[in-house]
Amino acid sequence: MKIAVIGTGYVGLVTGTCFADSGNDVTCIDINEAKIEGLKRGEVPIYEPGLSELVIHNSEAGRLHFTTDTAAAVAPAEVVYLAVGTPQGDDGAADLSAMWAVVKAIAPSLREDAVVVTKSTVPVGTNARIFGMLKEFTGRECDVASNPEFLKEGAAIEDFMKPDRVVVGVRRPEVGDVLHQLYKPFLRTEKPFLVMSPESAEMTKYVANALLATKISFINEMANLCEKMGGDINDVRRGIGHDSRIGFAFLFPGVGYGGSCFPKDVRALESMTVDKELTPAMLRAVDEVNERQKHVVSQKLDAHFGGDLAGKKIAVWGLAFKPRTDDIREAPALVLIDWLLSKGAKVVAHDPEAMDNVRAELGDKIEFAEGRMDALKGADALCIMTEWKDYHSPDFAEMYQLMGDPAVFDGRNLYEPERMARRGYCYHSIGRPM
Ligand code: UGA
Image: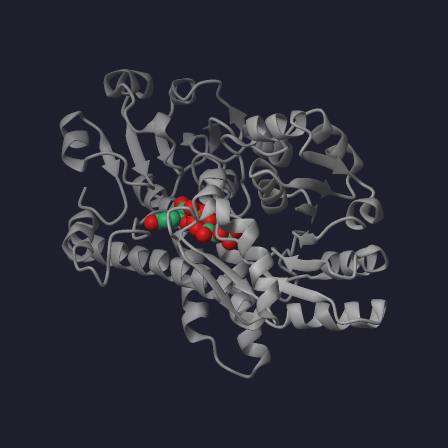
């Protein structure tokens, strides 16, 4: 099939590349010329395992193209994917200005039989609005479908190639059939292809993310409760997870969820609820608990140092909002660093992938360490904010020597409290006894 994908952000680039890999002729479009020129040379602007190789392979095979010329790319396309950004606006609602601009731009060149598909996360009702706009611009009833994306950063290729399910929202069953053909190569393990209305598909995306965010805020609140009551959240998680109604997934306590999806989507859904004069009590609580959780390590540091962090050297391991990405959007580490700087502490940070992004934001306000151990020299404390593999089993004896009298504030529960105590560490983690 001939496919055009508009927007070469995270979702658009992965979608376009994977569809090219399954044998389609794909053109990815973006208004950012520098980005497109880079992609033509095989330079992928984000860190995502396996993506660069796949972009280069499919470009060389002549199936994947990049352009800034929307009209030329859309004109022959049987399927046009819309994957532009829908960032959070000032009022918490999704900002759809990029989406409206693209709908206007594609209208004159759309084939009569083209299927327009929204891949971006968009508020319920957006698909219907696009349908209305295209009718106004083209004078005909175009097929507009919704196909929400459930991939995770750091595992995007794997998630796209082997989805748990594919959800599409359509007005005509024939459109569902077109999209089913497109997805068949990825559904060979009999995973379901679920067809529903565009509104249900749009809602599915928000409900999935809101429920996952709810699990995280819930377990974080229970972890904080364990700390006060004396339980160990790891044992509690083992104790509840075997109940098949509960399960183990997405119940790891930590320093709060970040990234470009959960915070934005929970707030966007909340703002939709308010628009409909409902009270989004659950969503508000999920967001509020998460915002508080981002301060949990600072509170422990504050208590440990008796409120005086001026001049203290604090090492921070992990800046990205999670491992296997260089994405620092809404990253809990940044909230901690902000607080440390406001207290007059000296911060030395390490991250395997995200240091350049943080440097671009914070400049020389903090120091960056080449290797994880370099961050520890003379540090008064170490805070672990992202569970990168590199941090799971460091040389504890070397760490001890580098830090002198070491205090570790582990926001991801990487180590065993008892062992850390035996090694001589003052070790704090989340929801477990010291
Ligand atoms: C999330 C969803 O998992 C995807 O299904 C969805 O497609 C995507 O949002 C999106 O809407 O585009 P992502 O933001 O890449 O994916 O990252 P996750 O792996 O879900 O992690 C999100 C945050 O939750 C991270 O900060 C992570 O540290 C935190 N988390 C996750 C926990 O604190 N505990 C857990 O048990 C799991």
